[in-house]
Length: 148
Image (cartoon, rainbow, N blue to C red; front, side, top):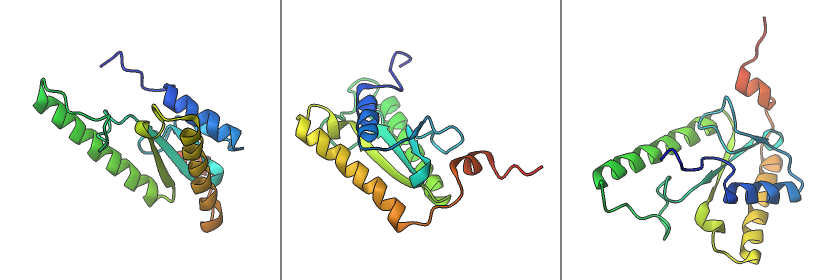
């Protein structure tokens, strides 16, 4: 598993390029936020997770439980899924909007479908700005108020 690429995957790079083309500016890595989101948009109080369907147990054609060491894989996938749920709840509890892009939404899709997925993501992100009151900035959330 150490050879599995965890960041800068093709799907992640495509989402980042798409968001940038739509005019969004973001931060990577989400240090200090629960679950270390792939993309953080502080202006919109929104985080984006880009999940691989296999590793995050998505109910689609790309997820299939391996036939060997089934118990190990089932336990691993269950713990990944539970961790994702906890992290999303923790982010929402402190006022962040959470969006998830799944590998199957972009992989092996035509250009028009991929563009539509990214446009929809952009629309969801923009809608958070108009429907929510923006709280404190990103640095205050991740580092605390820091008064000495």
